[in-house]
Every structure is written in C-alpha cells, then in structure tokens.
Length: 487
Ligand code: SAH
Image (cartoon, rainbow, N blue to C red; front, side, top):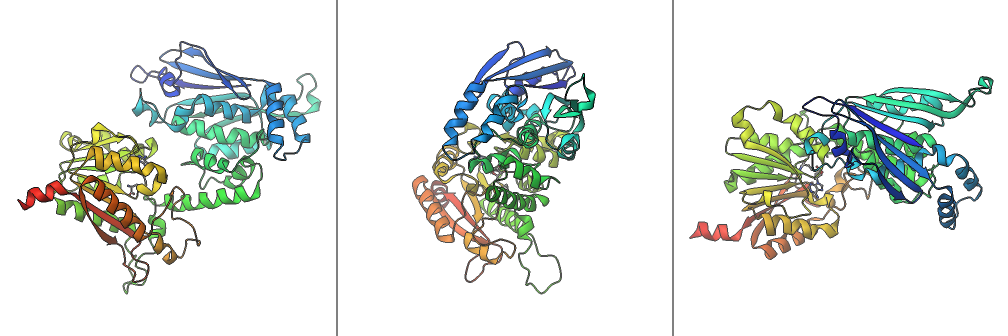
C-alpha cells in the first residue's frame, strides 16, 4: 500500500525543499512504527528539478485484528473484522491516512521551521495512489477532489487483467495534480478523503473524530459540494456525530464567507436604526474602538497578536502615527492570506519597513514581542483552551510587557440577541469559551493586578440595557507609565 507525492522545482525553489516541508530528509530512507504496522518514507528521486517522496505502509494484519478485538469490547460488530483482514495489507487507504498524519504531522499542520515561507506557498504537486479502494468509483473521486483545485485522473482497476469480462474491481488508480495548493492543504485533503473513499474505517469512531475532521477540513471542507457525504462517511455514518460536524461546519462557513470571523453574524447589529443603510458590521466597530484606544495611548509601535487575516494590520498601516506594525498568528494559512491582503511582496521600501508578519504562538514567551508600545488581542483569548490562558497571560503581560494592551472578546450574554444563533451555541466553531461581562472583568482585573496594570472596560457595538454590548473591550495600561506621566 503506498502513495507518492512529487513536486518540480527551479534553481531558486529547488524541488528538494519537499524534504524540508515533509520534515524528512531525502537522503535517508526512514521507518516508523505505527499501531498497524511499519511506515516507510523514501525518495525514489530527489534533485532540484524533481523530487518524489513515497510513503509505504506495511500493514501487520495480526496487529490489526488484535487491535480490532480490543476495540470490539465497545460493541463493534464482530463480523466486520473478517472483511478488514483480507485486503487491508494491500489497499486500506484509511490506514494510509492514519500513517500520513502520524509520519507527516508537522507538514499536515503547515509547520516548517526550516522553510516557513515555503510552507505557506502553493507548489506544483502530483500525488499518486496506485490502488485506492473507492466506493462510488471514479465519478465520486472526481466530485471529491476537483472542487478543491485538483486535476483528477482516476482509472478503474480491472478485477483481473486476464478476464476483462469480469469487470472492474472497487479500486482505482489515482493521480492528482495541482499547482494551487500548499502541501499542508494537499495532505489534509488526502487525510480526510482517502478514508471517505475507502468507506470502511478500521477504528472505532470516537467523539474527538469530529474535532480531527474539522481541523483537517479547515479552509476547504465548509461549503464543499459533497460536505454531507464526506462528514457522514468519515464519521462512519454515526448520525449524531455527523449532525454535530455539519452544524459546526455551517457556523464556520457563515463566518468565512465574510472576511472576518464573525462579520456574517455581526451584520445584525444596529438592525433597528432608523436609516435604511446597511448596519455597520461589528468587526468594523471593533477595529474603530481598538484604533481609538491605541491613538489615545499614543502608541507608535504596535503588535497585533492573533492578527488572523490582517484586517487590523492593514488599517493600522493607513495611519502614519503607527510607525511599526507587527502581526503575529499561529496559523500559517491566516498569515498567507494576510500577506496577500497587505501585498507584502509589492510594498515600497518605506512601507515595507513599517510592517512585519510573524508566525508564533501566544502560549509561549517570545523575545520578538518585547519592547513595543502596545499590543492588541482582538477576538483571540477565546480561541485558547482555558488551561492555556495563564501561559498567554504570562507571555503578554509578564514577558512582552507592552505599555498598553487592548483585549476584545465576545460578551456571551449578548448571544440571545443574535437571531441566527441557536440557543446555547458559541458564535464561532473554534471558540473554546465565551465570557459574561462579569467573567471577563474578573479575569482582566486579576491579570492587571498580577502584572501591575490598570484596566478599564469599554463596550463595542450597541450597549443593550439588559445583556450589554456584543463585544467587550479591556484597555490595560502599565502602572509605571501612569506614575511616570503624573510625575
Ligand atoms: N484578530 C483577528 C482574528 C481573530 S480570530 C480579528 O479580530 O479578526 C483568532 C485568531 O487567533 C486566529 O487567527 C487564530 O489563528 C489565532 N490564534 C489562536 N490561537 C493562537 C495562539 N496560541 N497564538 C497565536 N495566535 C492564535
């Protein structure tokens, strides 16, 4: 059972960079143990013009059966096991998908420390899987991959070449080509779609499969024309999980159709104003409130932490008072979009000197973030798991220590005012929590106390008498600065 990934290159962008992107050196064949057998990575060709990496999985049918038995205590039907054993060693593409994610986990996430800029770039890719079990045949293979930007060749494999009258097997020979995709996107397509085509997941579907699916589907699954089939098959037709996945994907799709995470839902703001004009999106009001706070603080050098797709960075650059603007985000994909929005590759020297995008995580201290006048965390804290917040707190308020910090976050009390939001739902699929006004104040007050800042709170959007504003903003100012000013 195997899969190859090839790319072509130029002297400036050698094809052998594939080795960096996959975190696997082209000169060495490497083997990894997985729970189903051994996975090998080798490069049949590796020169600057052309480079091919092969992932080969030697399935251990005994391990499979043993594992199956263990899982079976949960109640999986026993009869299904027999079918796993016969063709698995040769063709099980869902096992290949598991091996893919185990062996190329960083590449899947788009992380490449040696060549970060290349990880975010599309590159010419060709993927081949010589024997892919495909329930639904070549037609379904095309319906799954073509909407994602692949040129698809899917030829049915005859059951037996000597007896063509027997017809085709359920296998296809698959070749995919594209020059529009990043390696991370390509791997995430395969990770989800190979098992979908196989349609016989070998392991018991756990509830966290929904999270895995949404993570791997980021940027392409929401709104895919076959989204329903993909979620249903990927989750082994477990109805409740499938419904949950589709609901979450729908929220993501709504949010992504606009250029900011919540603008779609935000458009409801100000609906009852007298004018007929389109109400101002909340994301715009939020950026205005942030700009006001930054201007008042007199900041010139500003960090936008969790800058996402760079809307605020762009706005800050339009104001000459901000002499240096740095956007940081953990998501390579978001940064790639931000770089395009800001036209970083076409900026004049003066503008280019004012702006920088960094990849990094707020869960770790980072010396690159030291010495700035102000930092903004706009709609970011709620994307971290609560237990990670102390790490973010220390990284920003303890280590980077800008004079001014502006934090915005949704006010969960306001959610009852969103007509399009089903009761009990957060506004965005990736929100780990949403706070009431009291919860936000308690957190911000304690942070300010621990790190020597004063904090004040401001509403963003219409301040509802009962439930407050849709967005809450906290403005932190370091105490030492205030004292120095007073003196
Ligand atoms: N600030 C933007 C984007 C908000 S969405 C705006 O107001 O529109 C939240 C962003 O936080 C995402 O881009 C996400 O990638 C980023 N993020 C989540 N966890 C992070 C972390 N640990 N470190 C840095 N960025 C993170």
